[in-house]
Image 1 (cartoon, rainbow, N blue to C red):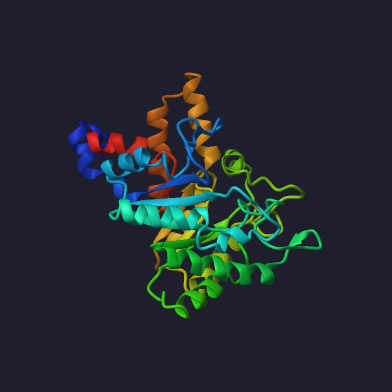
Image 2: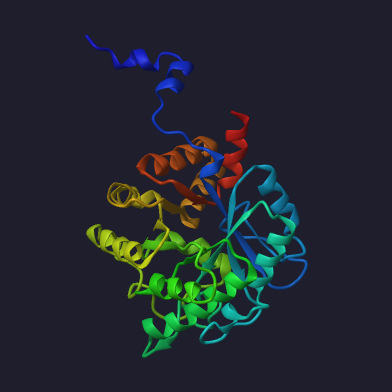
Length: 321
């Protein structure tokens, strides 16, 4: 009789036959950078995650570099907002300042920027509002301005999160026409209108002031639509395809892995992070064990890259092992 337990008997044999392994090289760490000075404020619903101003962020960046995390994903929180989010293409805006600061002081870090409007608009939606809805094509014009401004500031990669139709094509064209043909784009290719984003919206003050985002983010019921969305991004020139959220959409990560010859990323979002933190604080779960198991599930599903607020904690454990 063949006994599958033979290959589980000791830790060393388990290591030898292990199919998937997490590495610090898999991680991108999101950072929230707020315009102003003296800011280091913990986000109540995301224990351990802070908003920083540029004069306080060095300690955090020192730790990221020391842990050998290769990349950060920047989210800017401006001091002023308007209907169109014009601060997003201000060459001296908080995002542009942050890019220049990190590239100057931490040149080994790979800097990816969130390209969106919800943090910058007075209404909290991801673009220009006409007739109580986001105007897709008017938003694309502004998206091109924001993209080029980030590139000029020194971003290594741009990542549009607004789910506007044609966003990748518009960004690719604008980058190619302004001397940034080699700058890659990570598409938020399959982004669902999820309930798991709640803590993030607190983190960046981006909750919509009316309605919701279901007219541009995907219906959680749909699987085949995810392949269509990813196909559009692939054809328009995205260099990396992403699924967001991760844990409730592992099947979608696997679909993309099976169907596209591109690196696949996933975003382990704020609500997924906060649930584990809250349950661990209550003593209901082993927080470290569940953290690593959940990250491994994303890797097993097919993610080459994992954007996660757990990056520092997981890196510490991995570097010890």
